[in-house]
Length: 415
Image 1 (cartoon, rainbow, N blue to C red):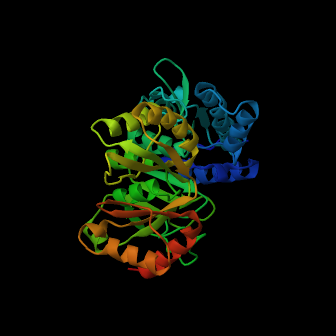
Image 2: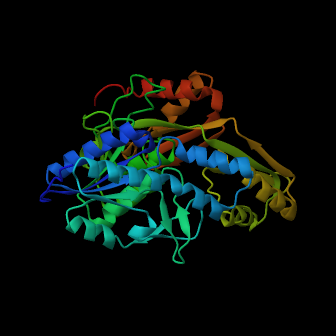
Image 3: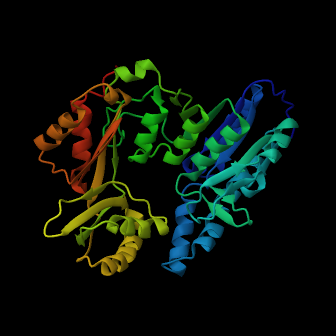
């Protein structure tokens, strides 16, 4: 093969490719060609990749075949292998078309995390090895989703963690842009699989994207958006399979506030848990949610009913995957505090209306409630922020609710 000599005079770009983009050898070769195009234009390129296709799901299934309760440390040892396969293959693919490249795992680039296995948080990145490789003209390929603790234990960053790796590396390297390549070509006003007429957004603010990601939009991991906002990293969401411009996630400007509602999100991965007849006295809520926090279980919406006869019910939502663990924890807490018991329901979904324009426009919540009522959809819980209104409803009404809200707020129309 002939080695291509590239003069890196342009931008420093971090590109991230998801599992569907590198699902097989041909797709990896295609990604290599796309990366090479950026390098040929004089840009320095760092590439972050996920495990191939459904590899992570297959590894989770393997663990489940061994034990229903795998040790979190050993789970990280297992899951981190998926990305290591991809980085080696992509580096080989780049070398085979004449572009010098080298691959690194998360620990090798100094991505240091806390000690919470399977959902670790990044503490710092040294990135010295990346800088050295870029300085000698190499394309750097990094394993997403993984890092290590101060004591050298391998950790993973949770579902969608490769997005976080990409944005964090872009921040550490002071990159000009972080491009997130995926199987969709941008951020839409709603899930196009649910609303065929959903419109691709040219730009969204960090705050809008953060709300949309945390409320169910699966295009970007919410923690990656937090990181991007904190360090001012421009994030460009693009399709691996189309050359079209995607969606730029960036700082808010005045024009964004003119649009009242930017998008509708839904999350079917929720569960609702209630602690029944809790004694209504100081310190009880701290005891309940402290026990969940100690197990790294993240709680979303919380509702406490009005006290009657000195007792109340506390209900909250959490990721469906954590429901069984939460029930185990709360069964002990309920006994300790003298509550009547714990009830859980998986048949719920969260529907949200998001838009920075809601800061300066009234009546969005009332309009949302009226639309759901018109279609006979009962609201079980409500949560609001400055730029979002969320409702928990019965899961079977999810698609009906999303389509009705998208139509009512006229989101298919260009603003």
